[in-house]
Length: 293
Image: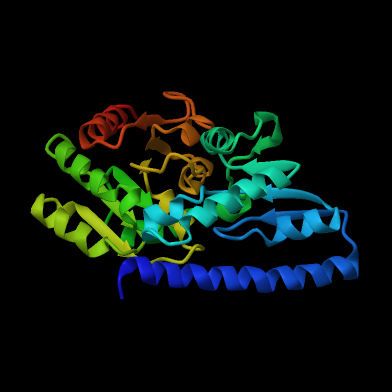
């Protein structure tokens, strides 16, 4: 099936679901008579805005990604234009729009002509109580992957192309001659994991790179706890990456992407080192941190 038709068929299913959700929401509005509808919106979803407008109920929308993300991640659809018009409809209907970054706020304001005062920017966050790690938990991880006596550089998360783990592996290969005892701990699984393992072999660093594969969310804090330097090499222009908050609550030295959502919450040289998605820039940041106990 051609990609355009396949993606369009998937979008048609989303539209049908939104119609069904609209009927459900109309029934709930009649039943509980709410004062406010707060909706975490999704691609092609406008049922909450439609019901709020028709019922005369106050409406707030939480929007965590632009409609254009769908095309970037999955490809074009015959409904891409409709998605943008529904996005605009939500912005116009809401009395307040909650976004995760100033970059996303500015994008919506410019694209749809929405005044900036209508937005609230609330970055992502983590619950500190979920990141309390006992010393013995971290010790188990060190023993499991033979990390004793080594400075550990790490990444944790789903491994997709846009996270830049390939950049991290290449940067690591550049600094290994000066820090031969260093280890790179890549925690997680994803669609490009096999390609990353092959990259480590081609760069002759596979003996110093540990790929854990999938770990449960409950195990992630202990893995972060053994890292001396926690890295996120790349991020998109609009999202608020949860990884940097996980790294921060664990007290790691952080290297993060130099994009506006990260600059919303991190100051260069104070909360971490912000880098371009480039192996040379990342390697320089790694060397700087490895030289500074």
